[in-house]
Structure formats: structure tokens, C-alpha cells
Image (cartoon, rainbow, N blue to C red; front, side):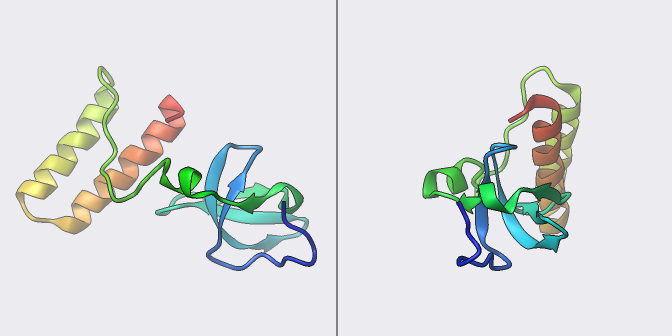
Length: 113
């Protein structure tokens, strides 16, 4: 848990027990801390008193060095994985990264993964 004697530093990777997610600390907004998913995405508000530094295991739970896997049988996952493969075939790293970010966001939103 963070305390007033331990100020939150922008860029710190923190574990939010309310959402069971690791986020990158951005700033404060009133009484809340603003966290952003590692690798980008929509910020969320968290209770600063409940946040703590993320463990190595928590940080690696969504290792960004490995591409996300599509969920079998999910048409949206398959479409995003197809976009990624097409971008790889064209050596378009930017489009490949975009497809990975979208697939991670979809998995979190639709499959809680």
C-alpha cells in the first residue's frame, strides 16, 4: 500500500486490487490515482491508499514481449489476429503493434483475460 510518505512516481507500475490489474501511474485526479494499462489504453481511477508496487509476477502476467493469443472460437479475436498476421507479412511493425494492442484490449474487455 502506498502512503503519504511514499509519493507515487509517474511511470511506476502499480497493482490495483480493486480491478486486479497492473497499471502505469499517470497522475492524480482529485482523491484518485490515474492508472493506464501497460502498453497503452484507457486510464482508470484507483484508490491511492490501496495501490502497491506490482510484483515481478504481476508485471509478467501480461508480458508485452509476447503477442496475445486469440481466444478460440471468437470471431473478433480471429479478425484481429488476422490483421496482425497480414501486418507481419507486409513487415509493417506499426500495424502489427496496433493489432496486438487491440487484441489485448478486446481480450480484457470481452474475455477478462
